[in-house]
Length: 78
Image (cartoon, rainbow, N blue to C red):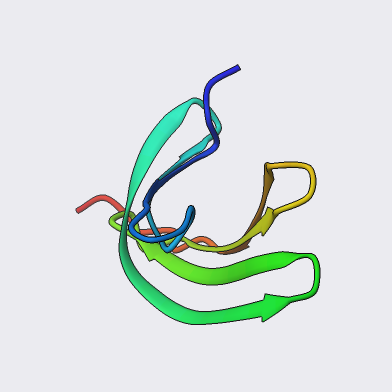
């Protein structure tokens, strides 16, 4: 299985997510709206180039990402 989240890692893993894989598509992240840390890992609220918003959470102990779609903009074709 491919990684769900691609991220920039500097002094530690998962410093900044850069892209995610959702429903067979690779979506680039354009903005990190919020980030937080818990005793279990680090979370991000991000926006993609398709105007979708996701909550990403990296569970450090299990080395796994969780993704949840928060908002999906339904643009109409002209």
